[in-house]
Image (spheres, rainbow, N blue to C red):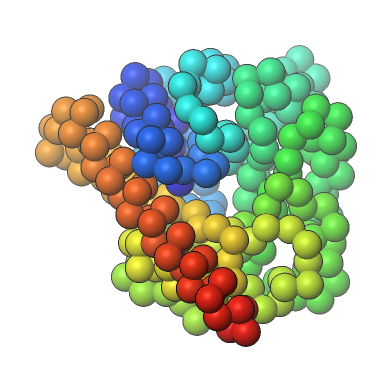
Length: 263
C-alpha cells in the first residue's frame, strides 16, 4: 500500500499508515510530497496538495517515519528534485543517509531515468537501501536491461500506460509486462489501477509477486475529509481494504501454486 505522508494532517496520517500495517501490508510505500508529481493522477495529486498545505517537508517526513509503529518495511516514493537538493551538498547522498537513519529501507523515484541513476544507486549501496525502478508496458530491449541491472528490492511493474488512479478492471498490458520480466531474478510488484481484492488475485495468479495500491486507499482518505469522518473511521476503512487486497493476493498465489504451468 501507498499513502501520501501528512494527508490530511500529520497525526491522522500516522494512524492511517499504521492501519495499513494491521491490515497485512508486506511493504508500505510512504509518499514524500512534491509539487510536480508527474507520474500521479488527480487522486494522488490531491493528496500531495493536502499534505503540503498541512506543512509536510522532507525533515518532517523523516520524523514521521521514525515515529511509526509498524512491522512492514518502509519505502519512500518521491521525486528526484527533493533527493538531489536535500542537505548542505547537492547530490543524493545526504538524503539517502538521512533516510537510512529514519528506518527507510528503499526508494522509488518515478522521474529518475536508469541512465542517470548511478549516483543514487551508489548512495543506496553505501547505506543499505534498495532502489526500486518502474517498468512501463513500453519498456523493452536495452533500456529494460539497463533498468534491471540497477534495480533492487523489487521492480515496480506499471500495469498500464498513463498516470496512477484506481480502475475497475485489470489491463491486458499487465500480463505482457510480467512475461517480459520472467527471466529477471527480482520480485515483481504490479501497480497502477489496482483497487480490489479480485484485481490482486488475478494479477498474482498471473505471475506477480506482489501488488501496489495507492489511489484506492487515497480515495478513502479524501472521502474522510469530504465527509468529515473521524480518524478512527477512516483508519478502519483503510485496514479493511488492506485486508481485502492481501487476501486476494494470497488467493492468487495459492491458485498459481496449484497450477504452476500457468505461470
